[in-house]
Length: 367
Image (cartoon, rainbow, N blue to C red; front, top):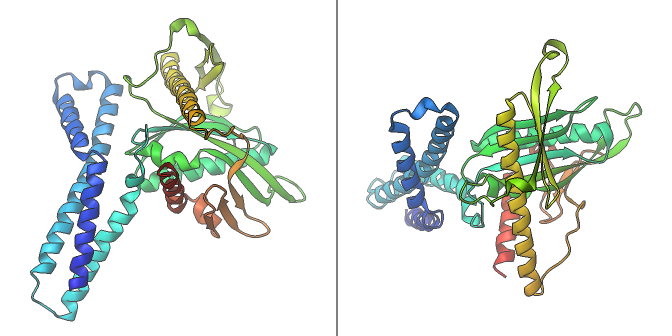
């Protein structure tokens, strides 16, 4: 019984320490503000804004309620254990199971302890691009898209497809999705970079062993007050009307938008079955995030140079390899974490890769 009490006391201490680090009071205040907005007259006059507000409220409330309830349940279980006078085997097993369940809930959600960097608590924009490898690479890009979507689904994140550019034969050339959920950007940081696949090609008549590459890009969804100010004269905005897909949609038209930030050369194109206005808003959201990220990278580079730590970036090196033949292995080249079950990884079981990456980043930042 004393062992269970010690475990519960340690767990309660960890929960309270975590709650202080994730600014739970601030999030609960935001929940109250959103509830006031939702109760205002005319709230649903702007349907899109109303949906965004209700979604943010739901996500924040689920997040805050989880940690509040976990602390309360742990406190109640500790009190029950301390005051227990029944030493029967059945009661012991019940209390042991209760403690184990609480510890499991904490461990599965403790990643937020490692998420304290700028933008970590933001929603995310994820873009996937097929690289070298032709049809195999496009198929690989679609496999990565499914992996990210499955991972988000398992974590309770909401996803919205912003752009989907299908491959000519199979797979996708590119895709962009928005991921909404507490700490979505911070949790998905481990996936940004080049992913390498080695397998027997299903698109090669001789089924030879092929290597394919795809890139995952990650951007935070910035709040209006965080976004960098972009001058209208620094933008080149092009709008065209394009025909839709074949089949039943052969006559569908929709407005494509391409925005170029002239000073940096950054371009963003959105072509989807939305209005031109909606596509322009999405394109500006992504463009602003990209320009802000570029500015943040410049600042980080300058700081590292001042400390004598700067190393030139080497683009194109894979962050992770997925080998399906002649053996099965997924290896992260940054952390050296491995899994011999690539099928599970590709089905969205990324928690261990995410955690090992975040722990490495936390240890490096503390050096």
